Amino acid sequence: NAGVTQTPKFQVLKTGQSMTLQCAQDMNHNSMYWYRQDPGMGLRLIYYSASEGTTDKGEVPNGYNVSRLNKREFSLRLESAAPSQTSVYFCASSEGAHQPQHFGDGTRLSIL
Amino acid sequence: GQQLNQSPQSMFIQEGEDVSMNCTSSSIFNTWLWYKQDPGEGPVLLIALYKAGELTSNGRLTAQFGITRKDSFLNISASIPSDVGIYFCAGQARSSGTYKYIFGTGTRLKVLA
Image (cartoon, rainbow over all chains, first blue to last red; front, side, top):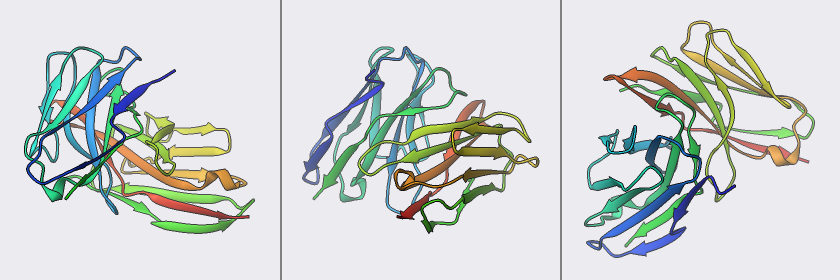
């Protein structure tokens, strides 16, 4: 079972470039999430989608946009990448907004 | 904002020893989750807790939902080398009508054979 699939796994960008991180889940989950993970810090929520057709800001939304393309897919876009956005990005999904979340393997993004 | 304090931050133990770690919060949570993350991978759910006082096991792992609803504990019995990794707790509390999880900063476990 694939679970939550993230692409790409690694990416290097230059400051100012744009990039879309892709996420797809095959568990028929309603809710999807984007987090970033930085050294010494817990996972921080960027955006989430409680159900298809809805998106909401999390703790650290500045500099990001999201699209819930359909029930399976939830993408994260960096319009103008900044070095402060160098991080590991995780997508997660859950059956419902109050159910445990299941994570992908992450996208390691470096911005020079 | 809400914060989770997870301790210890890291620990070295001998293979076969028991391990204990905990998470504390200044806020009341409705759900506690425990995850393990291996290098280069995403967190994997180990145990979910839904009621104050609940004690749940998953193999050699046992987790408890604190009675005050502000803390949770994870114990690993008879540790083995594959227990190495980072263990995260996550708590969920209602915020502005939706449920969001807050994650701890992790306990890095290293097992000495």
